[in-house]
Length: 439
Image (cartoon, rainbow, N blue to C red; front, side):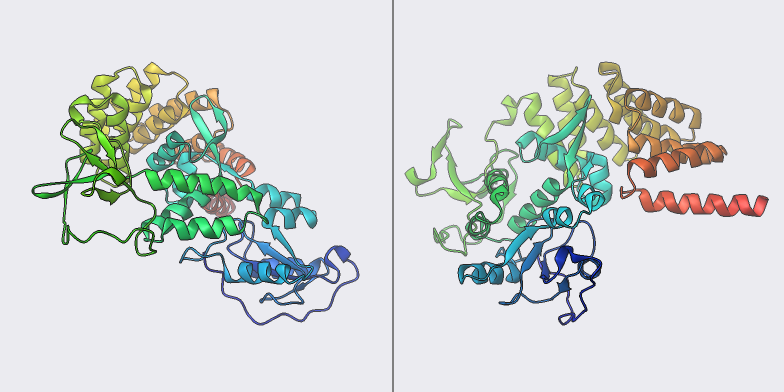
């Protein structure tokens, strides 16, 4: 993760009224979750400190942003962080603080709470562009754990999700696992909590594909998809940084069993995934593949996989929920409605399904049906911000502006920095202008 662009050191006077950072020279690295670097400089000055753009022997505090882990795009620790560690090793009395620790030092409790935000999967998709199916997959793999759950609805720690996304982006960019692992390990003394992303890194490294080679070339074991094999005899050099350490080796025997890579010379090193024969797949196997396909934007294939999951396990509301999503993405709104209805029939408190059902009905012009669905979701979870937002939109389209305004204000009370917050503020401003003109 690259630092935000900085200017030269800021020479500012130290105000007597705010001694909290009196005599401190504060630098920042990484992306801050609570504010921009420019705002952090201003806050530092307001609290009696001096904001600097470089780490040196005179720097007393380095604040590490919590919008992901403090890694550069190449997998190494940020330059400022490396310099700070070097200064500490040389005996410089420099503190490395996480952003949340710095905010608590300044008494900015509200900002600290903003850093520790919790989001639902749909909110994460809106805020970060991470598909709901991928968020849920990360949960099933144990990469992320809900901070709380209201019926089936999970709320995830924003920072934890951002951290996983950053690790996956680096792996997909070809950054060797051992380099990322070494960078994180080197920071453990200063950030003990980094043992968690190290565990996440191990899971991400295993969660992908295993290829094997037959007479015609490379084949993905789970799906049967063939891959180009330009140089089958050129094995990657083990232990080098040119080979991504996110891979394991395995080989499928005619029986379908798997051998250890070291036992067979003709194995293909690729990330791991299930080796089950499709004819023996369980509902979970089909569901997992359907979610993968949805995440990859292949809704048509996802429909077939999820239908197979439903055949194997017809009473699982989550399968019907994701099948509804896939059907809707292909333009089959009627089929999506039917599957959403099946999901809520199987689990009346499936809040997300009621909300999505309401959204589809809204798009079809059935505003009363949409409002009824949102009301059911809010009966189970009165503070469900997504349902509040979509109900307000529906009320506005139904000409019930005053009720919509009330709900928009409620949304902002719950999620002032939520993914739809700016849109809500715009809606409120437009309604205020209309009310002024009418008056």
